[in-house]
Length: 346
Ligand SMILES: NC(=O)C1=CN([C@@H]2O[C@H](COP(=O)(O)OP(=O)(O)OC[C@H]3O[C@@H](n4cnc5c(N)ncnc54)[C@H](OP(=O)(O)O)[C@@H]3O)[C@@H](O)[C@H]2O)C=CC1
Ligand SMILES: CC(=O)N[C@@H](CCC(=O)OP(=O)(O)O)C(=O)O
Image (cartoon, rainbow, N blue to C red; front, side, top):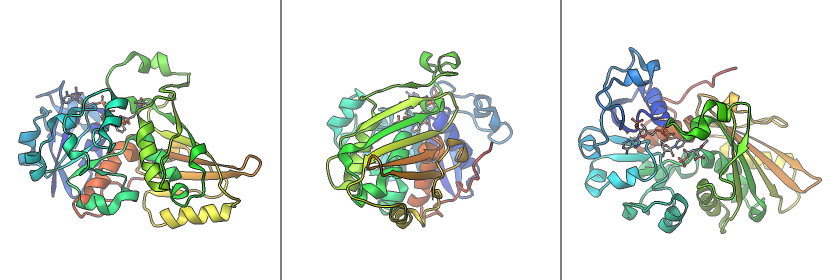
């Protein structure tokens, strides 16, 4: 049994980790970390866990937790993991950080976009970017995994095969994304109140969202060139889900069959990536509660562009599900253990 500790178990991403790990046959949770609910019953915070989880919430003492756990998940605000981790801890326990602290290799880019000073830059190079389908072999050997962001997971996986194959002109790539409100976390913020989001859709973080450099860096590795792109997120009145629509000029003439063959070559064997049939567009509702990424595309011969679409559940493949997938890889478990979940409907 893999002993797992969660720092930030009372947040949305941490709560989803609790849900997934509770059903995992090879893992047990030994630490339900919190800041505001220390010594309170976890099931009093999330009542879906009534008679399922009996434990109390604990603090964020990573030193102590590293003596008890084999793996620590940090589902906490930006900067916290970097402020807690040290060599002694990493020599005893593996860490999967759901924040952005170790995702971006250039510390100055991280500090510029996140507006905070990095507390442990010495671990950035070692950290593996935990996009399982792309970095599977590196994840298996890692002791520190940077779990990708929710928008970024969906944006990168949707474009990755075409970027890697050089089929799209990366200078023309534009990513338009929509997210449900749980993407903003559980903390009370006026812009996320019911009356502020219900019956309305808005763009935010225009030309400035912090997922932009993460997407640029990863798609840059795939394309083998520096990538600069427009990424515009939107907040939509639903609980969960991310939908991305990406537009790029094709570098040469192509057709449906060729593009489909590329996607199939990259993702045909992937459990969690479903490339949809011709003419079918991904919808967030068909992946809700699951670790699936649904991908579709359409060539527009009129404009010479291809339009790519991807959908995930931000809390599962966009956060906790991918974190569990990473844990499975790091501990030599079946990659899909605990994640073989059929999406909810309707
Ligand atoms: N929500 C999403 O869809 C996604 C989130 N993420 C990332 O996951 C992380 C968590 O996000 P999310 O769950 O949405 O956020 P929430 O605001 O819902 O939860 C934050 C969690 O961190 C805890 N926490 C806050 N400050 C501290 C602190 N100083 N010390 C210890 N614990 C603290 C909170 O404890 P308490 O509630 O007890 O005060 C809570 O458990 C973030 O880095 C986020 O960027 C990544 C991908 C998707
Ligand atoms: C809807 C919403 O607010 N989404 C969050 C991103 C989700 C996320 O948690 O991403 P990180 O892990 O990179 O922080 C945002 O736009 O900031």
